[in-house]
Each structure stands twice: as C-alpha cells, then as structure tokens.
Length: 458
Ligand SMILES: Cc1ncc(COP(=O)(O)O)c(C=O)c1O
Image (tube, rainbow, N blue to C red; front, side, top):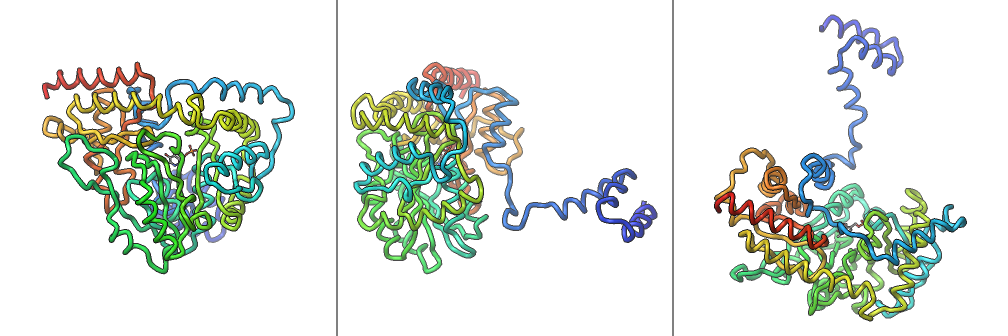
C-alpha cells in the first residue's frame, strides 16, 4: 500500500491536482483521497463547529417513525380562508409573477408601515424603515450579519431560538448568555412568568464590547411575555451602554390574557436603537410562506438592506402581495373580535389549557405559557420508571424525546437545543410540545400518554 502511495505521490508532482485525485480514486485509495478533499473542503473557519440543527434531526426522526408530531411549531389545520383566498386571487393575476422591489414589495411595505405606525405610535417610513425578508430567519440573519463585527459581544437570553447563536458566531461576534431562571419552584403549577432574569447578572454582562442584546418576547420555547418593568430594565441598560436591541416578536399576536405584548421599540429612547422582527408565517398561520420583516430607524435598517441586497436581493412577489391583502383586511378590523390578531389567542387558549391538564395527568409538570404556542413540561417525575438506555445522546432530554417518539409515538423537542453548551443542564429535565394543533390530535396525544401510563404501570 505504501509503495502505491509513494508512486502516487511522485506522480502527483508531475500532474495537475484534479487528475491526481481522479487517478487515486480509480486505484481505490479512498482514505487518501477523502483526507485531501476533506482538508480542502471542510467548513470555512467562521462556520466551524456547525452541526445539523435540532430541526433537521427531528424532522427526519418524524419521517422515520411517523409519531404524532407535537414537536415543530406549525398548525396542523388550514390557515384562515381569506388568507389562502388572497393567494389564489394573486396567483391568477398575470402581473404578479415577476421580481418585485428588493427591499420589500410596495403594497406590503405600505401595509406594514400602516400597521406598525399605529402600534408603535410614530410614522414609519415604508421605503426606508421596513425591510421584508425570507422569513423572520432572514431578518435575524441580515440584522446580526449587518450589525455585528469581529469581537463584538451579543447578549443572548436563554432559552433562545436556536439560530441566534450560530448567526452571531458566523458574524465574528461573541455570544454572552444569561438564563431565565424560576424564582419560585414550590408552586404546584409553574407559569412562564415565574422565570426571570437576575438583574445584577444582566447588568454585569454589559460592557464596552457589548454591541447588541437579542430579546424574544413572547419567548420560544418558554412562552414568557416580558413585562413592562422587565423591558424597561433591559432598555435602560441598552441606553446606558449604547447597545442595539434586536427584538424577535414573531409571536406578538399569541398572548394570553391578562398578559400584554409590549413592543420594546415603544419605550422612551428605544426606537433609535431597536430592530423589531416579525413573521407572516406566525402571524397568519402560514409558516410555509417564509415571509418575514424587520422595522426600525433608517440608519439601522440600511445595514440589513446591504446584507439582503447582496444575498437574496428580493423576496417572493405573489406571497408578499397575498400577505399585503391579509394585513389590509386586518387593518380594517384591528382590535375587534373578528380580527385574526385577536381571535388567534382566543382559539389557542383552550388548547393550551387542555395540554397543561393532560400533561399533568400523565405525571409531568407543565410550565403554563403566557404567550406563543409552545409548552415546556418537566418530564423527570417519570424518570425513575423509564429505561432510556437504548438512546445514546449526551443530554437526557434528547434521550427522552427520542425514546418517546419510538416507543410511545409522541414527538416533542428537546429544550437543551435552546441553551448554550455551558447552560444545557438547565434544559435537560424538560420537553417542548406545540399546541397549535387540531383538537382531535391533542386528544390523541392525551390518549397516547394515558395508555402508555397505564401500560407502563407508573
Ligand atoms: C422565536 C422565533 N424567531 C424566528 C422564527 C423564524 O420564523 P420564520 O419561519 O418566519 O423564518 C421562529 C420560528 O419558529 C421562532 O420561533
């Protein structure tokens, strides 16, 4: 073998690189070939350490085992009819199938500026202060890439939507983490409101290198809706240290009474330093549309426009037109009971209650969310009765969720995916379930757990 390698190495000096690789492959020395290919084509340095996300892994798990899927965050029932009707109408319009304005389809940025001007209490310029994107994901990416430089520190509140961390790292930034922790664990049923930030710990994270803080309210996966008092504390620190606030508010319309969604951009002195991010997928229950937006002052939005222009340039025209029709419909009935932005929470409230009840009956300890459509539950009261040894993952929430998918037929998401490496133990006792699902499927989940519990003689 080493003789063959020797000859190949000598030949390599006389041959251009590519033929050398092909030649080696023909002589079936794949290890040598792979090493060379792997060396050259490994992930660029700035992406090093990236791994397939929890979504990639768990969507495959669902395809393989076909469980009842309460993992991923989307409705398993049709969106409102006027929304799909709008898309049908747009599809038959001959003029709406070509490129549109790069920074946002004119009718949509108009509608967004009208809506958020009302909600924020100031005139938002549709041309310069709104950018539409490919989902909230791209809005996050353009914001983080457009504002974070090498060595900039970014404060991330845990648990966090998992893409924040890699996006900050790709930009050369340094994530600094702070976890929401329960202040009172003796209660029989915890609420997401029981999870708070330690104010001193937060203050200590701010320093001259801090460029931004990422806020997510209502929070995924916890469902926490930050109070005015909590937001004021964050806002004061942002102002004191001249820090950008990236506010991910994709669940802004899913908030359960008496809780209220407060937009941090409305607090005194915060418009100038806040970029707020939203999602049509979440707003109209059409996650497959992958349409999002960011709004904020023109000077901050400029950076996002540059990233957007030089990566995707423009979004999908018919989808943006249909979403504009959706917003115009809702603008005309804003605040009334018919408004989808009001009715969606009412529709979700009984589903949330039902889920909390059946998880408790199954022996878990749910954390009742104030917003969003996810629920975390502590599954460890069942731990002593389970044998998860067939699963080999490092964190036990991964072992639990995989075991449940395969053996009980119910899929949830492991929350350690929403924590930094150092804080993953904080998420291990929990599972995340999604309740924007048909009643019959929530009932089926309750039945699966009940049958399993009686069969397992817990
Ligand atoms: C907190 C949060 N931000 C952003 C997104 C991404 O939204 P979109 O599907 O519009 O890209 C999600 C999706 O689940 C989310 O939960």
